[in-house]
Length: 275
Image 1 (cartoon, rainbow, N blue to C red):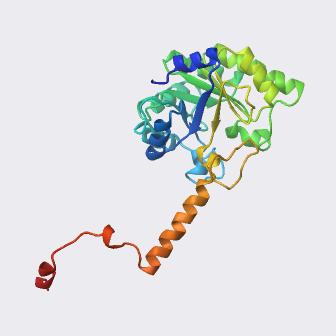
Image 2 (image 1 turned 45 degrees about the vertical axis):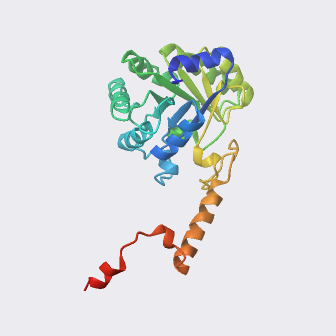
Image 3 (image 1 turned 90 degrees about the vertical axis):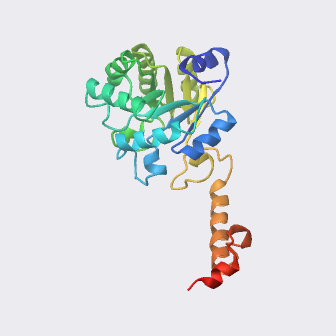
């Protein structure tokens, strides 16, 4: 069944957890489609995991469109969410709507995601009025990492926790259909989830959220530049890949690959006539 804004809302209402993973390419998207993942996030985390940037701030609209379009070609029923990169929506409401529209038209996204609370509510409202679904993002917002002073848990004091609740209510009122909560204390994330009518997706926010998201390279042990506390490694695919690469190098150097079964034949008499 096709995952939509309505089906995800129904999952929240019925207490059925929503599954989300990041993805940035066609072949991985096809694998996720086959196992029934509900939603894919083409996150600006691709700056770190795919492009080798030191942060997400360097990611461009062209980066996001390129990867989102690739993912879209590998899925049928998965709901596709795409991040709006740094400075694609902060500059003005007009820019926000235009760039959200590009992610839908050129990237074939089903929903766009942007970071921030009350300060981006005018953008959320305008994007929604343009018939584009919006996912908000609160807590640790990587595009604001320099303003936050590093990758730190958010909402630990009373004032900070209340601000997160107020921002969550505000983005829902502005029209957001979903909310990502990142690096938020579990009890606070659970409280926000209970307050809101829209689904919440947690990453480092406990299991009281309506769903969970992880960067797929993190949960497969493929990205080891840094591993957040909230990551569970479901398989060590990184080690499997390195083992395969080593075996390939060894086979080529020893001449055991390609073997006869990997080659194409030609009649010897043809070869004998060549000069």
